[in-house]
Image 1 (cartoon, rainbow, N blue to C red):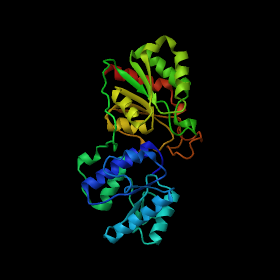
Image 2 (cartoon, helix red, strand yellow):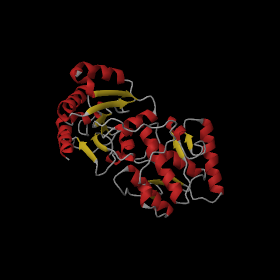
Image 3 (spheres, rainbow, N blue to C red):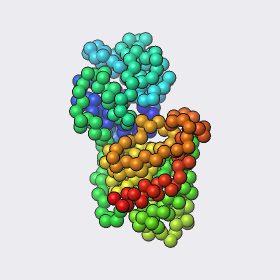
Image 4 (cartoon, helix red, strand yellow):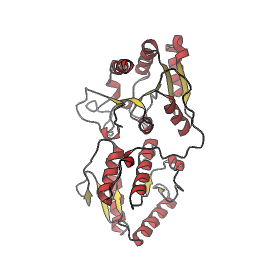
Length: 327
């Protein structure tokens, strides 16, 4: 698990389903993921362990030792697509008899290889757990939920107008391929307010929020009454913005996973990220870079042969919006 909100949402929901519908127990190692404090099912301290903390690392090892003494079979499962660092960590744990099997999807020297079954990362890992635990997960286990303890009441939409919510940012700020330029977003917002007669809600947590708001304000000043800006100070406000929307438009970020959990209609701009990370559903439109030669793979994001959201034309989203309006 990395430090991202999306990772926490996926694997928090996953381990809750596994522990609820099987006899397995789950513990997670992560890299300083602050979102674990939102864990709603008891204390997070005996469930999540920060690999960068000496204290947590010691507690993690002691927890493995305790489970082993209790007779549990211990699997080291890597997050799809996995990493060599994770594999070597599991190899070290196995060398010290703290782990029975290393599990992966694609490393040929893993002890157990479970080919991906499914199209969304949540379903894939749950199917993997079903193979390892011999558990028959019911249909409701595949309903992705938000593993969050919300400390404030969420508002419900009180505006009768159709609200198209736009989250234009990606946490991968190191690579432009993961989202549009502000000029492209402005072109789309202009189309919506001029032709769709929707209200546009621009929301999210990003250091560039104010610059983006000022830019849109100058370019679309005559339509200011139809554009709402809602900076999100925390996860609760982020979720509240998603709840108020009739339609979400965003890159493939944590917002897409929140929208999936809340069963929102979405248009997702799919770029360099692996397809497994993109939520699927009958009310989800996925728009891809048709000029890409190779499939998505986060690491070579700046290589033009891999997908780039910036090459997705604004007109492609506009066509989908026209279809939605006719429905």
